[in-house]
Length: 114
Image 1: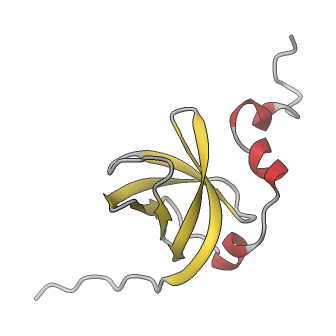
Image 2: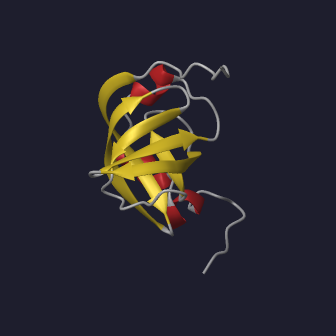
């Protein structure tokens, strides 16, 4: 019998995360969370194999792979381990918006001026 590594414990939560894919982002509910992944409501209409960006709590944006999609939910595997306490911290709408799209470069001194 082959040993499989133990899966990190999952915590049932109701958090909100910004899920970005293909140049746009959608706010989704996070249903459970571990240091390596999450289960989200699939409001972003992602498919297995998609690469997405995730903004959650006070974590800096991270990348994730969609591992499965079923009955309106999707499972994400993060590209690095996350601090659950930071993921649970409230994030302001302004912070989320400033980390995505063109707003993310607004305060960049090297951005092009029109």
